[in-house]
Image (cartoon, rainbow over the protein chains, first blue to last red):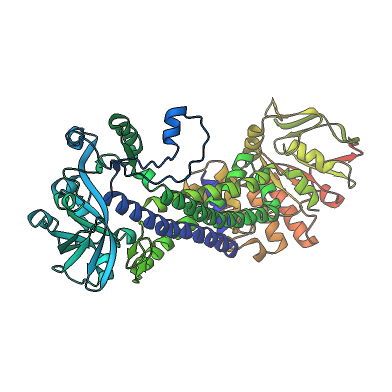
Length: 417
Length: 220
């Protein structure tokens, strides 16, 4: 082994320029992989974490069905084909019956961390001359804390004020901005769907970083919203926090079966985003793999060139007793050495790019809001980049190395005359 | 004198043409045999077969009394590394390696691990072949004669029982040819067996035994 390493190292280091070019190719590929993975996954993980944690892992709610054929189907069976004209959406019984029973039941199930009731509705908020539509969410803070992480995003930590002062509300940071409210303590007018006017005090802001939520959400006491919407003791959603988020889908199916209500897992709720993210990942990784393949071709080229140029050396090595497998290993080792140095340099370069990206400060307003890149700086991308580079380097160098081992020394000696 | 290497009724065909037509040869300890013949007579082919670089179409090669199995590539490599040293018309030195390193590689393959004994053996060969001071030079920094002497040193690195040289002076001027021939004579005097292929009769006449090949047959 020592002789193989010695010869491989010598052959490689004496061809510095070529070795450097292919090493840099690998380094750039690995660095691109690390940087792109870090940016893409950073954004995705941040979004999913925020959105999932704030909303719910599982939401139990009334399924929205608006099937104009339902009466015909009830009479004539499911197979009927009909086109019903003049149908209007019906006012469904938008409440979860016996929700307290479910609260007790799932609260005591050790697969769940917490469960909380919600009453949701729409309204208009007025402040001065400005008015904005808002999504109202009636909560019980004590239960809400166990079922979501809403507390983490309340700017001044005044979630409990909606309990002590039932006419107080917490509004989204962007909603506040759109209404022209800069600090808590301001009074807004809420116009309910039935036309009722209510004066409520803004006691805090909700700032999740998810633009769509911060633009529309209003948290208030469950009892207050029940009164405003004229739905005493009613809730239309139960949010559930599970211990293992990956189990949410199967648990949702189980809950749905048990309760008869529609249980939506976070995966289903965010399936559009997850699909987009999946596609984004495909595009990103295809680009990065293209870079890595180009660098692998760099290694392949250099190895092929080396094998062609070093035919005489290969012949003499065989003559002095080196076996086919050892000749293969000499050249594969060169490829792996290029891969190893390239991968290590790539990791260093990737780290430096991450540090640089993290230092950039700018206002990012889109699906999420941030003051710069949200990076996922886990070591797994370094490990994956390293492994990919080594695998590519191995495959890129194997064929030329195998070709080298198949050379017949006598042919070389005869053709050298 | 014991027989080190023997070729029995060696035949070699490539396609329709017969290169060797049943040659038998014995090389014993202390022999210095030269094989002469016209170009294309089959002398190099015979050396490649005896040196286990090529396999015969039929016939046997016997080394240390054992018939060589040409199907066992591992064994052939091992014998070539430990028992045979090769010198060719072209030096075939690895251009990326220095004189010292070129001499070192057969020893590394032989599994010599002790750094001190490696160094000692290398310098012993460097000195005996008049290469002192050239150990750190790359092949292109050496003259043709020096390059060929490095190749001889490499052939001797593992102290082989036999050195096989294929036209070792074919690429050298008369002065360097004489110098290389002196090296071979000196080695033979110390008991090393040498098989040399040459087409130059004046060099062959300096060896102990001259064999001539004509049309794939040993004629003398």
